Image (tube, rainbow, N blue to C red; front, side):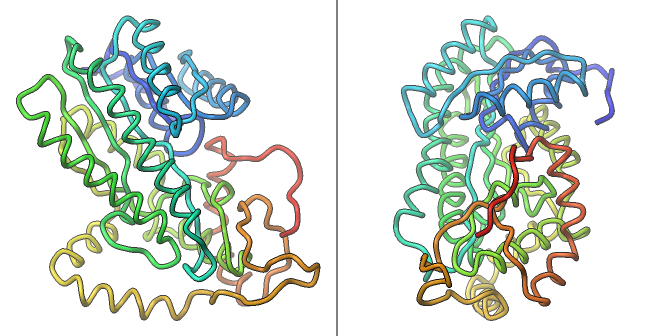
Length: 339
């Protein structure tokens, strides 16, 4: 990441970023630090937070604060917000970025997958927003709240249904909060990124025929033109925050998909149904070792042999995505385990 010395309206402001230890959240934290913010990074894993803070220090020359926090826990979020406000002498910017990604056909999921997605993505955004708003309202610079949604919240994406449902709720939350904070000291910006090269495929969870699901997801999310460089996405999000924009949709594909769904939702839904035919089907029965073939497996644990088709698909975009893993603190300590 190139350093910048240009003046910024963010100089001296205090910022809190949830889910900020890796991927997009890490890049957002670094961009804010570059602009002179006193940044606090929140995430669940203390070791990962430490590596993320070192990453930011190495690339920006700025030291950030860290706080261990599970956004699903309302009390923990409120504590993290209070600590940040107290330690930094106020709170001016809050970005709710924490989330999970589950990739599987709905036939391979149960209601628990929806509960997990809603608790982390939507519940985390609600906990963060509700805890932060009173502090942001006291900001002398005018508080800024940013909620990270997704193109998956603008239309239902096949094999990402729990994620899409939760992100749709985040989008509604952002629009509602923006309407209810009009005329106050706080602005609310909702961001809907499309596919980004963040290396998140190793952290995502895969069900059904997990190796094939991993293949198409990691390939598509790393393919140039279709996906976006995560560092460039972070820069655009920070600029939107500076300008207090209401909404930002990233990538031309995401923008086109959102517009098409708004204009012709039935046609888009039928097209999604057609696309689903080319995705892996949900398996039945058990694997050779007697374990259910449709269990959820995290991406970094998938090391089983792929079919020639799956390997070919994955090779299309995996190189750029694998590079993002190394660049944005997505690496998992220890060797992968077969799935």
